[in-house]
Length: 435
Image 1 (spheres, one colour):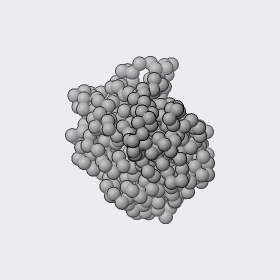
Image 2 (cartoon, one colour):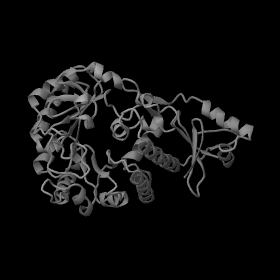
Image 3 (cartoon, one colour):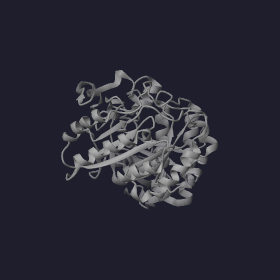
Image 4 (cartoon, one colour):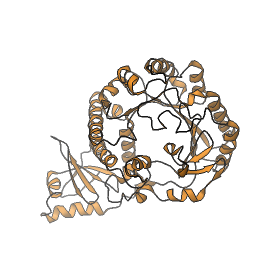
């Protein structure tokens, strides 16, 4: 793909296709003529340069910005810090413990925490609870107690609770699926593909494969799909497993709502990073060829970009860490990010005591903290994952160049597909018009 740029106007051209332009601030996508495409490379034609400059300087009144304030509307809770798997790429201490095993969280200590955060919110909007581990379904009683308390506290209010869980899928028993149904949970199941790969990257603690258990659990889960929230199949990819196409072909046998492809947070291999990008582009090609926009948008990354472009809503923060989101570990310590658990230097509170001074460093929009203002993808990306940056550079606010490269390349693909799906027929030429 060839890319040309003039300030906040970026144009992309895939082999054999007409050029498409993107306005980075206004989140507008448009066809452009061959003349404008050439003008982006050569400044000789003053009339065409004027067209580009006029568009670039415009401010679209319909564009909004998703701003995050210090209002905690999401809590991610480590209900356990133990796991029954030993994934080869585990970033949670290598065994799900974050370096400090804890069999289960104290419900007695957690409920007052929930009460504290719930009482600070206005009676409107959504309050999200995410259950993680280790493996959270090792402690289903804790999940039920926490969910029931949140439902009780929000009963009769306009504050709507929403529950989610990330599970390895090996403990999706009938009883646990009933629990997830009872709280209408959004469920993300981690599986890296078929058994030939998943049993290598995600073995049980005793070294045996986990895939057979996951497949049995998925059968129960999908049978209950009508009574659940969304179901996501989530794979993590490293230099040792970079066949996203094969994983996608495996995922498609299941009626999941979303497929999530994640590059391992601790993988710093340039060759693997480039391979991941190529593979996800191939997955996008395959999805679009077989099912058009609907199939493409089942892939989480592309759905997020399409949603931003459709709504013309800028993103200033990659996630809500330290702003709208806090994490409760299994000892009731508070952190800004799930990956910070176990790092005492990143602790931002305990119980109902929030260290406001520790959260000050998260107050500014992430694109400002990370100095992203010159990046054309800033309002689609939101500054990137702070933990991924820290793993590569030692600082949450010093960008990981590999991450940025993956984001920009894949967002270019998403923009081209967005244009193709919308079939915009207005050309940006010397008469000037836009979509």
